[in-house]
Image 1 (tube, rainbow, N blue to C red):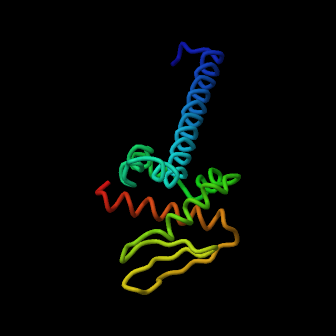
Image 2 (cartoon, rainbow, N blue to C red):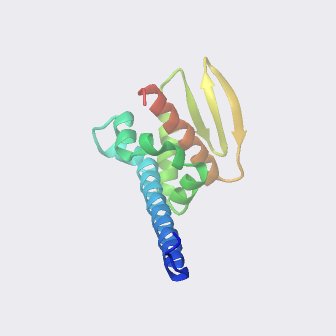
Length: 145
């Protein structure tokens, strides 16, 4: 390093910064692509022959679950009332003795005929995003992912 000039050091710092920014942009795009695939799951389920577990695995969620947040899903669901309706229908159509539910602005867990931990949100998009995050995590756990 003693032979490095200030220009060399600055150039290396600039390259490192650009590489970091490119990596962050790539990760953000991947998270967005996964969020879109996750948000589309009930639509794809209605139109195809794949199980929820298969759709979730195909989305990339399982491998990158820590990068998908409720905020990521809010961004994805905003402007897509069709996806919100599809998730609301998904919740209402579930025939399980336990699981997450979405009813209007309320998200909670149903088990043994009792509704547990209901959470009320200020808007439908946030409520849906919170439900989706919990629902897909439940699907991932049930499928051993």
